[in-house]
Amino acid sequence: MERKITCIICPRGCPMTAVIEGDSVRVSGHSCPKGEEYAIHECKNPVRTVTATVRVDNRRDTMVSVKTENPVPKGSMQEVMAALRKITVQAPIHIGDVVLKDIFGTKIVATKEIL
Image 1 (cartoon, rainbow, N blue to C red):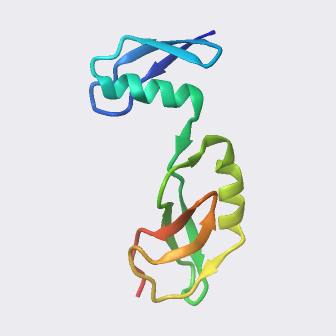
Image 2 (cartoon, rainbow, N blue to C red):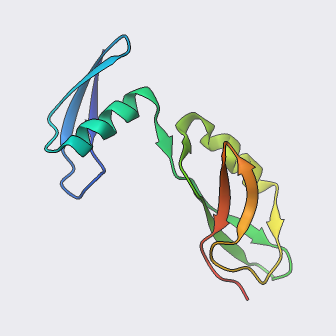
């Protein structure tokens, strides 16, 4: 199977081709080893950092921006978003405060300060 991938590691955005045969991935078109590594991970185990907002309960019409502390499996993003829709936080909240302790092996942390 052949897959076209654009590298997102640096601004260069190398267009790469990954050829997947069983557990093996051959990559061409990369300009550096980091691009090759990115393509292999993207084919074998794609992960994403999820960014979203969570409602602040004790502030009218206020949301706080949040993100996963570490990337989660790409296929789990919808479950992460569903969990975030179910929770609210109380102000004050500071950048780095943990909003959700454990979801797919990582934490959800605030990326904005609400006083």
